[in-house]
Amino acid sequence: MSKFIIACGGTGGHLSPGIALAEALVARGHGVTLFISHKKVDTRLVEKYPHLSAERVASAPFGVRPDMFARFAIKQSEGLLYSWRFLKANRPDAIIGFGGFTNAGVVIAGRVQGIPVALHEANRVPGKAVRRLSGLTARLYLPPGVRMPGIRGVIVRHTGLPVRNEITRMPRDVARAELGIDPTQKLLVVMGGSQGASNLNQWTEQNLAAFALEGIQLYCVTGMGKGTTMGRREVRGKNGQIVHAWFEAFSDRVGVLLSAADLVLSRAGAGTIAELVRCETPAILIPYPHAADNHQWANATYFEQQGGGVVVPEESLASLRQEVMDVIFNDWLLNKFRGNLRRMSQENSIDIIVHDLEDLASGIPPARHLRHAPSTI
Image (cartoon, rainbow, N blue to C red; front, side, top):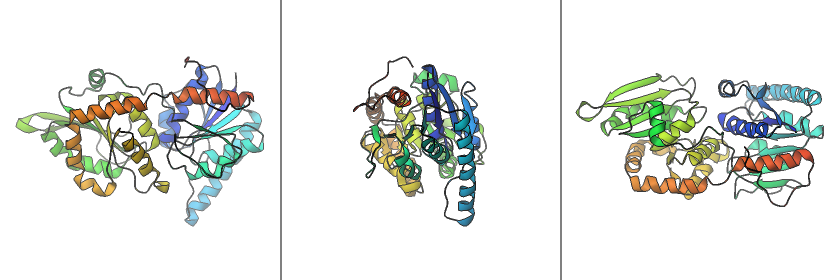
C-alpha cells in the first residue's frame, strides 16, 4: 500500500479527474489525500465523496494587475508553507497534480523533500502551471499527440483524462425517466463547464420559445451564482403543446444528463470533452475565447477532427440556433458522431495512470511503454 497526494482543486475540470483517480487508487488499497481549493465548486463536488480525505489549501491564480499579483504571491506562499508542513507530518510516496494554481506549493515542497512528483495536463495546449513545474517532475502525462519541447529528464506518457466511474453511458430512455424528461421530444443540453457560461445562459433564455416551437426540450446547467431563475419551466409549442425547459446551477448527475441528451451545446474544457466521449454524446462546442493560450479552441478542434461534433466560434452565436436545428434533427449525422465517440472512448486512462503511479511510488524503474493494470477497479 502506498500513500498519494492528488493536487486537483480550482475548477471542476481539475477536481473531477482527481476524484476519479483517487477512487481508483483507494480501490486498489492505497491511501489518498486530495489537495483542493477553498472555492465553492470544490466544496460542492467533494461533498459527494465523504470517503475521500481532502485538504483545503490556500491558492490564487496569477494576475498581472498589482492587486491580483499581490494576492497570488500571498496565497501561494501560504499554500507552500501549508504543503511543506503537511508533507513533513504525512509523507506520501508520490504526488500528482492536475494543473491549475493549487499545484505549485505541494509540487515545489514535494520536490525539495525528495518525494516523486507527476503532473497531468488534459488540455491540448499545456497550461502555465504545467509548463513551469514540469522540470520538477518525474512523470508528465500529456494528451495523445501533444508535445512539450525542451523537457529533459522527465518520463512523458501520452494518455487521456480520468473520468469518474458514475459518469458513464446509460440507455437514453432510462436516463430520461430518471430526470423526468419527455422521451418523445428532442433534448438539447447546454453546459458552460463547472464555472458556467453567462453568454450561453443568455443565449438559452433568448431561444427558449423558438426551440419550444420545434418541440425541442432544453436543459441548461448555468453554473453557480449566474443569476438565472432555476427550476423547470413550461413553454408553449405548436398547437399549444407543452415543452419543458430546466435550469440548474450545478448538476451532480452528469452521466445521466449526457446520456439523456440528443445533443450538447458546451464550452470546450478538457474535462467536459472527456465526459462527452465517455457518454458518447454528440456536441456543438463553443470554445471560451479568453481561455489561457486559447486552449479551448485547440481542444474543440481536435474533438471535431476526431468526428465527435462540430465547433462554432463565440462570434457566431447569432447563427447558432440554426446550426443546432440542422444537427439535432439529422439522425444520420448524430449516429455518425456517436460511432466516432465510441471509438474515441476505448482507452482506459485510469488503469494506465494508476499502474504507472504505483511504479513511481515503489521506485520501480520506468518502463519504456505504459502497461495496463489488472481490471479490478
